[in-house]
Picture 1 (cartoon, helix red, strand yellow):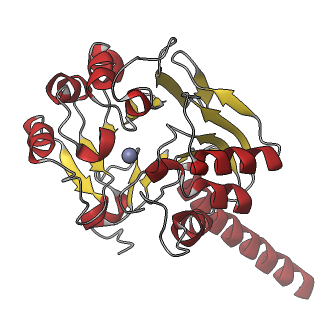
Picture 2 (picture 1 turned 45 degrees about the horizontal axis):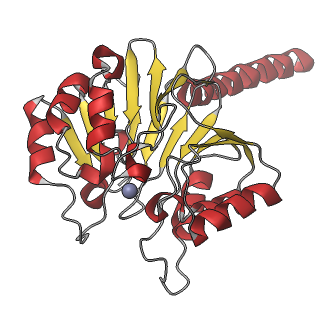
Length: 300
Ligand SMILES: [Zn+2]
């Protein structure tokens, strides 16, 4: 009798454990999750696929670099990755070599294992870019040249298409920005457009793709600058949710009233990291707005 009761108890415990793990597993595996981290005036976007694959797009940075030892990669990005359960980065995307996108990456590469990196390899040099390349070399991380037409497999049918830069690179006054790596992450009928820092020529080129750039969620290009090609670009994307990665009281006037008006014009819900902090969207969430702003789901 005793043994039987213990067995039933054990079975009950096992069922309970499975139920709890089922909930946790479902939660972790349920939705493609995209977080636009709050790195001040810069970009850093974490993409977590249900398969467990992770993609980090840029790593923040601080224009001017001389910030008395402050390193956004060490102080903000790495702790944010660890807090979200990221123990390895499958694909690191360097959108372009500007300080506000790559300044934090050497510290991230030092702290978190990276399997491979994509880099547009735009000609030009800077100390920060040299530091990043040295960090990637030291860790023996393979670096591939990013060009339109490539596809990154994130598992379970979810993928990211590289839409920019083209080959040959765009020859414009804003070479770095216009050739930055633009990705469209696709999960069935839902998608995310990470538009990096494209300026007029880059945005006009993307706008000409029409339906190919239509996306549920848009990381607004170039911190919401007054891009002259913004109207056809935003009309082609038709985002439901738009996030602007921008620093409070930045000296560039980002985001501009023109871009905000454009986004509101297509009915997009607009969030900005200077006011909302890190913005997380779980693409399959019925709530339809970023997680930290969704009633009852708050992370503050
Ligand atoms: Zn930027």
